[in-house]
Image: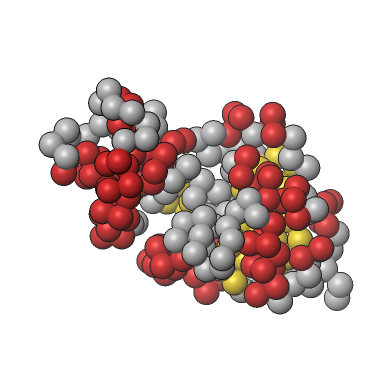
Length: 225
C-alpha cells in the first residue's frame, strides 16, 4: 500500500498561536509578562517548546542554556494542554486533500514530534483523528524525526510499505527524515517558514492543498486497484 504521511504542526494545522500562548504563560509565571509575539515568532513556535523558551530567555538578556528552560518545559506543556485548540486552525483544503487521497486508495498517517498525548488530544478536539490510519508522536517510539525509523514505523502502522511512501512537512527536520528514509518529501510553502522551503530542495513544494493528490501521484504513483 502506498502511504502519504503528514507532519502536524505547521503542515496540517497552524498551531503556533496556542504554542506561543503557552510559552508566554510561562514567562508570566516568571514575572516577565508576554515575551513572545504570536505573529513574529510563529516560526519559532513550530520548532517546539524549548525553542520558544530559549528565544524568550535571550530576549530577557539570559543565556540560551539557562536552567529555567528545562525547569519550565513541563509547565509549558501543561499550559498548552489546557488550551490546545483556542487559536489553532486546520489549513484550508487540508482535510479535503486527505479525504481525496483516501478515496483514491492511499493510506494516510501523521508522524509528529509533538508528544503523542498532546497530538492525540488536539486531533480529537479538531475532530479529525479518525480520518488517519495511524498517528505517532515524539514519544511513541524510542526514536523520533529525523530518525527515519519514526517515519517507517508510522507507515507500517498505517498498513503501508515504507518504500512506497512520501512525507508532507514544513521543515528541515521533515526533509532530512524523508531523505534518510529514501522517500520523497513535499514541503508546504504556506506555513510561517514557507519562504525557506525551496532552499531545502524537496522533491516537491506544495503551495495549496488542492494540488497535493496530483503531486503524490507524480512522486510515488497511484495505488493498485
